[in-house]
Image 1 (cartoon, rainbow, N blue to C red):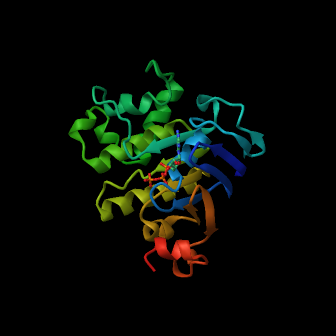
Image 2 (cartoon, helix red, strand yellow):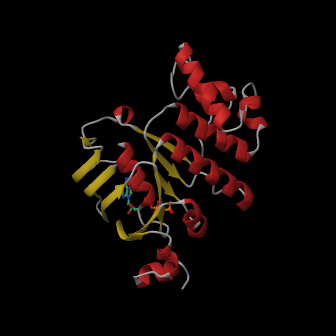
Length: 231
Ligand SMILES: Nc1ncnc2c1ncn2[C@@H]1O[C@H](COP(=O)(O)OP(=O)(O)OP(=O)(O)O)[C@@H](O)[C@H]1O
């Protein structure tokens, strides 16, 4: 369980303050208008944004003293950060070893992640020769190979067409269940998110304005969520 208790980042123009519980084995979708604070929330969790006050724990362990690389967290952004001069294999492997000198155990992790995402046949290719969907599979494989229990995804599939986006969300669903991951997924597609997510959190004005399950979309409790959904 990832627990945020009044986790706060104060900027001159705005204060962001989040309280949330994200269980293991579940996908929590973060929706909300542009500028609401969704990306900053992920950055606060990953350790890239300065925290002013509050509490952040994973399975009871205080994460705030830990540097980004020490946190049990891995992040996938829309721009998947692939290295264009490296092969797919190396792009996954670099998540485990920056020097690319892998132990047999780490090599097995890379192969397992590639198999799970259906990109085994692409391991020798360079990212530029892959489709957008295949590139995002490589990005996701790198995250999974790192075997961190918390996965943060910032609109990872938004550049893809709807069918492909849904295919990757399904894949994410399978891996979340199989590995018992705690997943936070920022998305601009609330309806799709509701199909695969266990919980939804509506981020508005630097805080979690409303949260619940998919019913939130059919029966919003606040005018702000209703307006966001176009109601
Ligand atoms: N480093 C920073 N310095 C100042 N303000 C910041 C900083 N980081 C975030 N903010 C504040 O947080 C707000 C939220 O921005 P953020 O990018 O997280 O929104 P978002 O919901 O992810 O939007 P989008 O959907 O467009 O990506 C910004 O408008 C800004 O006020």
